[in-house]
Image (cartoon, rainbow, N blue to C red; front, side):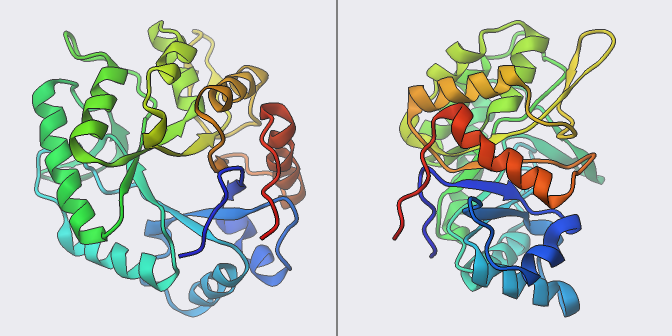
Length: 279
């Protein structure tokens, strides 16, 4: 496996930049790339060549969208076996997905939906996580999602996450922008939420931009630069939990590579995360 420093800064790999990055020398200040695994599993041709070249230049993190760990269906063990082969082939230690569900008995829903939070659901999910980790032979890393609906009478979100982490032994991808968006939309303290999470379980961070609607609701679009309030929350998060690898995400209104690179590198100044030490 290729190690990634706790103070590393990475970007989400997008198709707009993949060929250019594959053709160039490793970019100073960009320590790793996070790829969406469903876009690269079992690829051939030009994409396979891109992936091979990128994996030679950068450590990779794999981030998924379709595991649907929070549904009530059996795990897709064939999919997880393919994921494991991919991770092993490209020496990827970190595989993350979302603490959510995205399918029902009729198929995939193409959205990340919030799980009704109760002890029974937490324990059921923990059992599925253990099964997934047995197949993957590495910890599963799960991201806190942004959500726009709350089920009545459910557990506190941070309590639910802690129960899943403790029961399963999995790790957490802490999305700082998602915490900020949810806190604004649902009326809780984002720093208090982050402070309540167990530091040893946090594997890495996400940060991104969002959009504010005319009604004041925040939408997690990944379509803008990270705002000052989220940068400040990121600084507080590092102060609370210590440095972790940090990924800048951008999925909409994707800028050219120089602008995205400069924003990623600039994160170090904002959050006080030093550059990794040379090996």
